[in-house]
Image 1 (cartoon, rainbow, N blue to C red):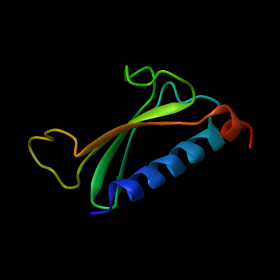
Image 2 (image 1 turned 90 degrees about the vertical axis):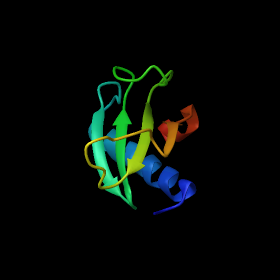
Image 3 (image 1 turned 180 degrees about the horizontal axis):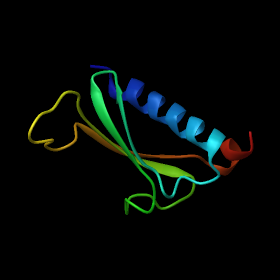
Image 4 (image 1 turned 180 degrees about the vertical axis):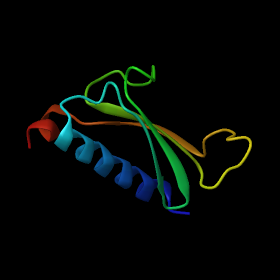
Length: 87
């Protein structure tokens, strides 16, 4: 399983990739499997943790869970500051 720092870097890349195809992340509700995690990405429409735009809430669970997803191993919000958005 990848470290939290590696997970966060992957999730930042996911956000940049999403923004390459969409102007907004508000409606995002997607999943990815990466680094030993099942990762849920949620925009503002699906998570009260997202307070700015563009941003995503990340909840990472152990990959391959069955029957009961349980609590996330890691949860955090990825946000881009104004400088990153214009770069």
